[in-house]
Length: 539
Image 1 (cartoon, rainbow, N blue to C red):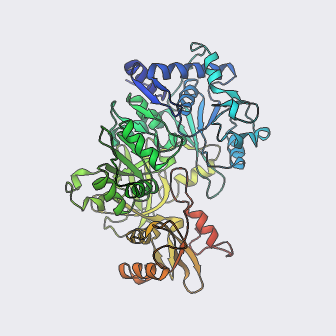
Image 2: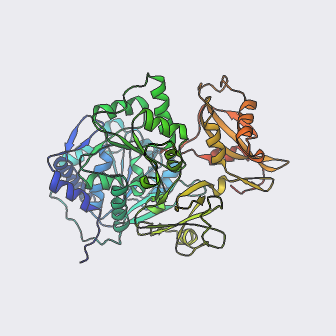
Image 3: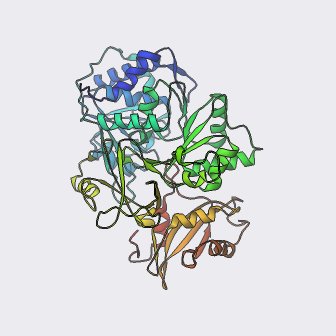
């Protein structure tokens, strides 16, 4: 029997079985059941339809992690329209490009960010503009609450939809050129939500704290998975350590996500505030992704906070889940060696093939030392980039045809557990030797006076490139870091091969990051290489 996989099924299921249960804790103070959430979604669908939005049209959302984003996503998808979440850290020029590239028909924007759309309003094809607080928004914007209140919840018809139709477009960061729209279908999003539910161990009594930006819905899928399970969404307007800890306790949060920088922020708060209780009535599990947190951070989260940490790896294009380090049969209970395993990106998630290949597309040996590129194949991998067939072909047909090429370099151990050594562009080629910036960062993180660090290649007349570390000191004062540059250089020299040690150090107030807390090394690289014709490693 074949039943189409549709993303609308998730809210339908929650309304059917959990209608009288609390669904959303809003940032504005309201609390909505799934019946109430569903009614608001229906009304917004009707309002969008009344304004001409049809199946296939694009509806963009520029919003932090509020209930307005949840409602707009489902209202859009109920019409068969294409949900297009926007990164609120982008500039008006970025929004002008994306809204034009996707030919967006309607925008729903938070009052804190609507001015970025207003600045380019006359240059984009969009005709419908809605703000969650029109009184606090400059320009001619309709008010979200007024639009919903005036609409008839029965005033729209859900069209026929097929699982292979595009239902979301999620734009990549555009750090190496114009942003690319990742096309995701009903099928890829549904399968991703299934995989996420299994590997995050989601249940109907979970309380999920939105510390991860909702504009990553196409990659992370909690909009679908948490809703479909009938669990509870706790919304936020950003990540503040004190607010996060208070909310975890007050709302009995059981699950959240956090990049390593977010975890470090929470550890710093914990140490600076007398080691407060870090949980309410529920046990807490946390997922981190991408580059592994320092071992000291993992230890603090598990041994001090009492949380259970999972480390995942993925990309927007892959749905995003590629691997998980949560392999408990390979860990020795609570023994310290579990931290080494948790630092790895791990093994492929269900339904996903992961390989690490050499330049000829052949699997590298499982010796934990031979470096290759991670390639991925699975049902949740994107169909392609919006209106960019050449970029799509390049992403899938390089070393191994038909597999998505991540650009991440890794080694593989005997169990098939991958460990990322670096991005292609972040590998430092010094005197012909390949040096992992991540390995240097891990070493520097072990120093008590280092709070955060990013290592990039810097130009060297002698070696071509040399490692440079941008260090956020634990003192939070770059002028009084509590440690000298020479001491940090010596610290790495004592712990690493001589050619790998950090050569240059710069103390900084903070590191440039994405909205998910990932360090934007390209900004640091561009600064270092601004006066050079090219980079040795072409990063």
